[in-house]
Length: 444
Image 1 (tube, rainbow, N blue to C red):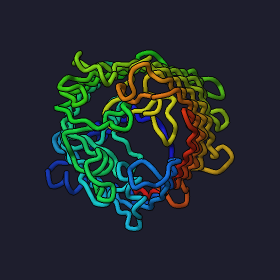
Image 2: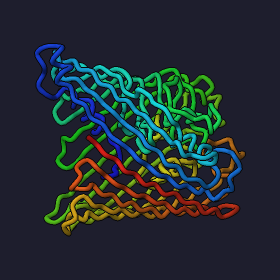
Image 3: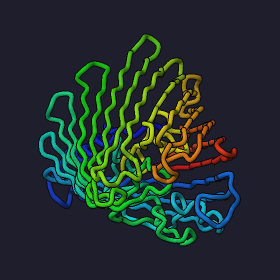
Image 4: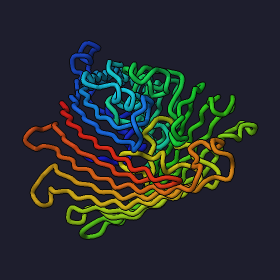
C-alpha cells in the first residue's frame, strides 16, 4: 500500500474512469455489464493520549478492533450515462466504554451508510457527476483513514478540452463524516454510522472544527504544458458558514511540482500556498484569515530509496482553513496526527521523510516509511480562545512516525500495514502520547 497525498489529479481520474470504457447498447446491458468491487477490512487501533481516562472524548488510553465492508457497483455507460453506488459498514462488537468514548468522533461507529449514489454523464471531453460521492482534491477531500470514508453530496464537472489542462467545477450542500459523533452531537458510547448533514468538517480550525453551511462552491485547474512541471490551483467558497456569524469563507490553494529526471533517480521540487479569508468583518474573534507557505525538496527511485525535507510556516495571529473534510494535507503533516497541527497561527513545521521499496532486493510489495516532524507554535498575543487552532503558550512538539506496508503477492488484493506514532509535546507541561494502527484490507 502506498500512502500519498490525495491530489486533484486523483479526483479527475475517478470522475472520468466510470465513463471511459465501451458503452452498452441497451439499458439492460448497462446494468448487466456493470462492475462490482469491494473491500473487506479488519483494523486494530491502540491510542494513548497521555491523559487519564475520565469518560470524556479525546482523553485516555484504549484500543479498538473493527471490521468493515466497502461494496461498490458501477454500471456500464449507456449513451454517456452511468450510475454508481458505494455501501459502507462497520462493526466493533468488543469495544469497551473507554474505547467508545475515545474513538467516538473518528473510528467507533457501528452500522451502515450508502456513501455513494451518483449519476455520471459524459459528452465529448466533459463529464458531470451528481449525487453522493467521494471527492479527492486539495481543498475538498474525503478522508479515508477511518472505517467510514467521508463523502459529499455534490455535483462535479470536469473538462479536458484545453491542451494539457483539466478544469474542474463543483458544488456541495451536505457532508458525511467518519461517525455519527464526528460533530459531537451524541454521547460517545452512542456513536454509530454517519449520515449526511448540512454541516462539514472545516479542517485546520482545531478540535472544534464542525460548522453548518449553506452550500459550498469550488473551481480548480491543472496544467502540464511545461515538461516535468505540474501546476494546480483551486478556490473554495463556502456560503453562510456558521463560524463567521452569517458571513462566507474563502479558501485558496496554489501548487507547483517540478521533477528533474536523472539517469538513476528523479529530483523533486514542490511549493504550495494556502490561504483563507472570511467576509464578515465584524467577526474577527476566530482569526482564520491566515496564509501558509510550504516548500519541499527530495528524490525518488534511487535504488529503491526516496527521501524529502519539507518546511511550512503560518501567519502570526491568524490560522489557516485547509478546506472541507479531514482529507486536506500539508507537506509537514505527521503520518497519523495529520495536517491540523501544522495550520495554526504562529506555526513553523519541519519534516524529514525516508522510504524504501524492498522490491529492489527481491521482496515485491514490501515498503517501509519513516518520518521525523518538529512543530513549533508560538503563543498568540490575543486572549486564549480568540483564535481557532491557537496555542495559549509557546509549544514544541516532536513526532516520530513509522509505517510498514505489504501487498502480499501470493494473495492478490490483500494488504497489511502497520503504523506507529510517538509524540512529545512541550508547553507549560510535557505530554507524551502514542498511537498504533494495524490494517488488513482485502480488495476484490
